[in-house]
Image (cartoon, rainbow, N blue to C red):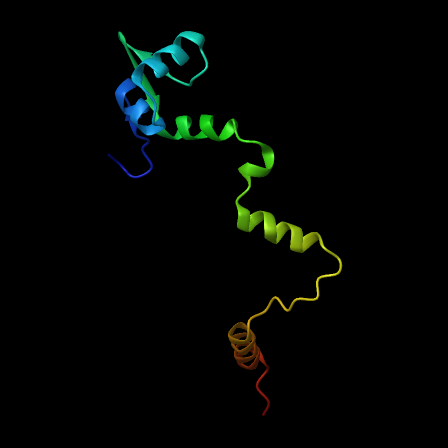
Length: 105
């Protein structure tokens, strides 16, 4: 499989990915609730679309990663007193600033 190519799944593989019985997949297909395509007489699923379909059922806060949600909250807070720069990062920034200074001569 080439880089960037999505994995194509059978009903059994889709059921295994979603941790459900193949009959559950067949029921979802009959109801038109799951993303799939018919190839000949068989159904095929794109792994990425199944993952996106599952995520679409999450509530909005659950879709955000916990780290991203915390960072977003800190970004919008006006009274954050916490120093967000680590001491090693501060030292690295100082050494880079020294390298970028104009040479005197």
